[in-house]
Length: 137
Image (tube, rainbow, N blue to C red; front, side, top):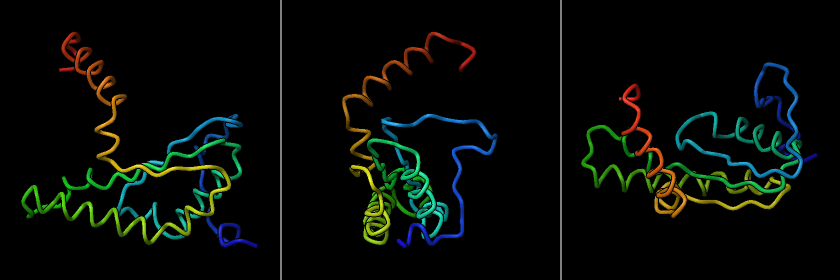
């Protein structure tokens, strides 16, 4: 039995009892670095749920540099460097758990997502909607 199967926790997509069909679909696992629900057995439980759900691919987004905003008392540069180190440490600590995925996966980091063309397109759309809809301001 693998370590993923030995866990005594259960992850849910929701607790409302709704049925979902994920066969062949892609999923994003957004990791909040430093949060206990993305560590140890809770992460293993999430990987187990993904494995049981029929997804065809997993994109793991390590939201490391997003955490720079939580590095109180540090300069912006120090906070950024610390958050990158935290992301590196998370990846090193959890690579063996991610290797428990039974579908193809790739890992990306927060700054890679922000630098993507798709993010720029979506951000521009969001900014336009914000400017057009006064109730959002």
